[in-house]
Length: 74
Image (cartoon, rainbow, N blue to C red; front, side):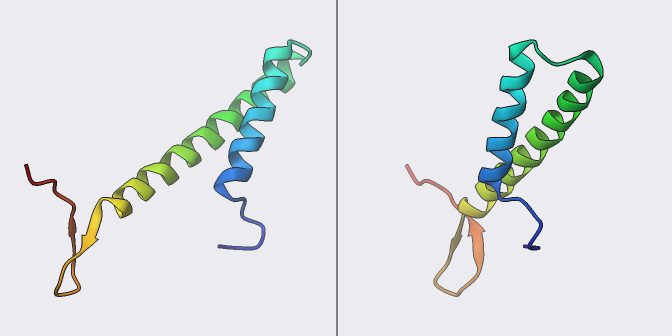
């Protein structure tokens, strides 16, 4: 990860702040459009990060050291 790259938690905090600002109603239209665009970008990045994490977690290391999809046997 690059030094300037924000962590997942940083992005969530920033997203929460933007949402609070927009909900306050104290943002002019031009700023609201910019903030909304920022929020959507952050939400997409966070969603992709969670999806990638889920894919990693759903893999298991087998006895012969290969990754396979995790399957629950019933």
